[in-house]
Amino acid sequence: MAWPDEDSNVRPDLLIVGGGLAGGLLALRLAETRPELDWRLVEAGPRLGGNHTWSFHEPDLTAPQHAWIEPLVAHRWPGYEVRFPTRQRHLGSGYASISAERFHEVLSARLPAERLLLGREVLRLQDDGVVFADGYTLAAGAVIDARGPRPDPALWLGYQKFLGQEVRLVHPHGLAEPIVMDATVDQLDGYRFVYSLPLAPDRLLIEDTYYADGESLPAERLRQHLADYTRQQGWEIAEVLREEQGVLPITLGGDLDRYWDNVTAGAPIGLAAGLFHPTTGYSLPEAVRLAEHLAAQPLSSSARLRDSLRQYAQGRWQQQGFFRLLNRMLFLAGRPEHRVRVMQRFYGLGEPLIQRFYAGRLTAFDRLRILSGKPPVPLKPALDAALARPPQSKEAP
Image (cartoon, rainbow, N blue to C red; front, top):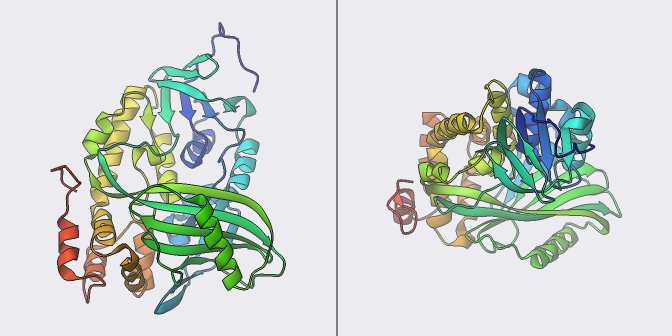
């Protein structure tokens, strides 16, 4: 958009800083349900969505939620497959993905162009506006921070790190549905699997993924792993079309109150607010629910919005305690190369339970079923992990 002069009277009701998944979905929801609200979506990069792929399981969302995000969906499949050293399984619940390209295309078409501020890096975020890297200041009634994960020692984290390549193959790959986890690969640096999405008969997105203790991502080594994997599958790469990588937080425990006490300006949403599936790292279902929640709020000031979001995040934190317990068992109860046993056992459970797990809607019986039976890791380390507290802390997990 054309920038207003610094002495202009432009002062929107709301600034959303960050045009990724959480910020973009909120802007889309506001455009559809709050026509009276004057907002701006600010993104440092030239395009909304950056360079990401967001996937979700069909049971994760309600029918109305599916309806309003449907234009964003680039690919759908009727099911998916998982592979482990002693188990291979097909699951019939639908699976879908949103590409960054589709995300940018749809939002650019549906959102008013004058409300999209692309290529604008925010130097400082305040309760009443932002200061851009070029010195320009834009005031607003409220400011939302949707710029991604916010490192903070108040949270005890493991990490899901990945490097993915979208590739065009010389010959068709032969996959009809995604392989969401192929854990038959060598177990290195924690629980490792390869994730494959068939985007076209000769096109795949392949990701080398790790549940690991450290957040460093050795990109060149992961590229070599992908090259080795494609060769083992009999796939010959004609061209690497693009590459994406990331390090996602996996929450083991921490002090959420202290985490929110450290927010001094604006109101964080998405990964910055700790709103993602604690075990899988999937963020789209949480982002959809949060966009609907916020669209029903007054959005009149950063302070009130921050308090409201804090209460919302605390409610989700309480609901997700069981997932953090499972994370501690996954990360702490056995040697890193043995973590695959935990996931292999989990995928032997009933498909409805697995659906509820991904949707974050486990019943009391589901929790009992997950923990019952012969444990995939030694019992004492499993109990120690369940009761573990954050390092150098006495806070409850």
